[in-house]
Image 1 (cartoon, helix red, strand yellow):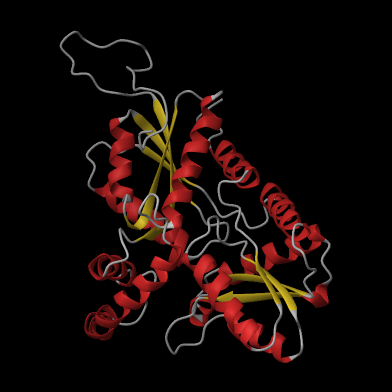
Image 2 (cartoon, helix red, strand yellow; image 1 turned 30 degrees about the vertical axis):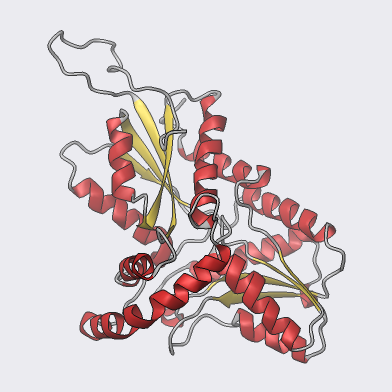
Length: 355
């Protein structure tokens, strides 16, 4: 199907257009789902382009520009593309020649369009990536061309961070600055304690745990990491992660002593949010724990950080140190539970625009 999902554009709300007026689509409302990003391929140059865009973002890297330019261009972009490409290749969707994140985000957009189309025919759904393709600017322009005079921006992050939600919105605002005729814009707020989200997580994770052929002694709730000083500067991410984890543990009825909240994907020598997921896995194995499972509720879609870092790297760490059974529980993705969350948030945020 086409990238855009929704009805054809029409004429103005009053149904009138002068005979010599050019055809202009109008009267539509857009919803743009955005996720972190994806390289176009696993080769060196595709990875280099993606990493350069990602690691040049001042929301992500707050090191002084003069220092970071040297580190990024002389060291990181020389060495890291090949290493990252190998990791991406291990989880690459060969059927569609794309990353799992792109496959899943597309499916989320298509399923949301189908769900909203039943009673919101004026809504057009699209999706984009903050880094890589399809870009936010490209898809905003497509929505406007399709007649969307109002657009809801939905960064797919349940917990807010300047490094995720804010930078996705920044990119959209940058595109708006170049538009002569801007659509009206709303942004979706974080939803770390949304009852629909917590219930969906508990249902999905509970079902996955019940389907295992072993009972985990410990359940790790792993979120993406963040430099510690970002928290000190006022980023609410850490607190929102713990709120989600607390509510999720209660919904699952999981005993507190067997529940650990951890943070993964740290990089560089700086201090990041503690405790670290990989160090916790090592410590548990060292303490004689033989069976663990890891859930990643901060990710709306499985990606490199869940499929390779958690399901592969941390499993290898655990088993090398004597662990016997390891499970990485899938994200909500485009499952029925995951789509229920996305649809509920969108319907709530469209109120007032749609009766």
